[in-house]
View (cartoon, rainbow over the protein chains, first blue to last red):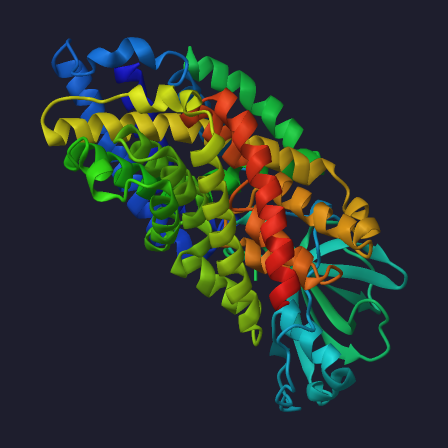
Length: 227
Length: 305
């Protein structure tokens, strides 16, 4: 197992570094994790290389206790499963499938009285979370009539429009919680397509905050797909 | 051969990923594995450093000999390992191999993912303006870890841990020991982490959310439901507070149970513990811990929340 083990470590570390360098890790974890992933990648590469060199260098490894390691080590091969997935297909960012299944973000938590937006020329880009919080705060008074711009993916068609969603993640995609808004006044683009919607807040949405859309543009999925 | 296999596999995998459920599963699976890696590496390095640098028997001499003292001390020492549960398993295994009292090593195993400053800070951020949640989490986790450690010291079957106590005492120069231990622990803990990540991703993809909402208002049942969710979701202890904060249909006490149980018992941890300490151990230890963690969070929740 020694040489093979070193090879597995080397592969795991390399793939971690590749994830960081290509920026693809943003699909799975918070952008702030990048540095730690890089450090972990370097350490794992070093462990793998050293093990490999040692195993190839002298045929008689120091681990004479190999015989009572039975079974325990074979499980290490399983590390190749996510490696293969990442190298062959690179699983996508979370999409609309999970929107109805995960617990939604509680927009009421932590939202106090928000400063009013300047009603003016340009639409204000904001996160779906902020949109939800402003909608909840005094029934959207803080929007002040200003146009806003939201970017997210299409989570399905709805009466007179569609649902726009984006996930919040705290650590990794396993703890993702969707924030959802309803876009009205425009037809639904295909499910899971990323769009930027410009429009104004429309009071009276019952379960979801509503945005009366004046413009819907399809965009490329952002580098950091989560809020 | 590998290249041929990869070329044949790729279109197949791509077709599979066109199904939203499969894509969701794959993303969650890879995400758990990727985000655990830095913590796993930290744990593996600490474990290897203990193996290489701490002389055999030193720990046993340093720690108090009486379980009544050693277990709470070890549980409180968990504050010092900043990380999540993936890192604490190899460290606790190493402590055992180095002659620490089993009850004390297990108390450390349970407390460190829950009571370290990183996790407590995350909890404070997730529950703004509710410092009592942080205090309750700290106390309930410490209480549960100490109780499990003491219970194990009284009536636990230490022979279940024989394997890890006899295991892998590599002799040689410190650097060689460091390397051999790190490589061994990395593959072993990493492999079982993959088993756990796959299980958690499957449960997250398959179990519909409506099942959970149905029991939210049902008192003690809600309590058990969130504990079960913590076991099934297997999210990192640094993130679970944010998920708990979003489960607003549940009472604060039930959400406390989610945060106390999660770092101590979940599908990923059970796989890791089974791999490190043995299956027979994990089969007894996980239910014991679950019951104690539930009791502890019920008690502290009733008192503080």
